Image (tube, rainbow, N blue to C red):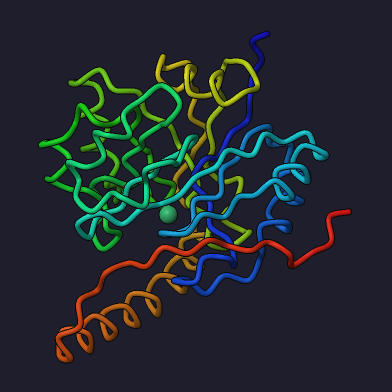
Length: 252
Ligand SMILES: [Fe+2]
């Protein structure tokens, strides 16, 4: 049975070891429940944050939790949802074609945002790979790097969906998508692929903009310093896969 599903499929939690995030996966689910979300996916960087216990906890809250990951491939970020088998073997963008199947959804997150590891120009060489382009939450009325993604999506007939890419709980719920579909992985993917999506998003208000700047600037400075040190020490920045053990709360 089709229903309107409130969905956010790009979310980060404390289990993401590459980020300094306060809330864990259970706390995020509690907040998702409070805000009336029907479907979410925890897409930590190069980290699987999904197991039966967490999925059962989500079910008790009447939330469909989809397995997900934000994978770093050739230095670019790609969202992979659903069946994640084969993800560990992906080394190059072309390897992602092996994951192109009904039970796996591929999303290009924040594709043209600077300093966020979006695909940028690389997207044009593999547009047929992606089911959905993301309309990123981080924009103002004056500065909006989503505009190019919108024109690409319109030209190529690709669906767009808005998600929050939340690293902090105050970001969660500011941008999401309403899907018309069945409450199942297949139903959600079918709604997204078919464009049965209504984006609910608005430019950052002044307070959110200040908070975003306070969040982004130290993080960017740290990453720039980190990258410089890595270059100097000639270490290669190859992301390491981790499997999160979610036992930070007794879900009963
Ligand atoms: Fe992200």
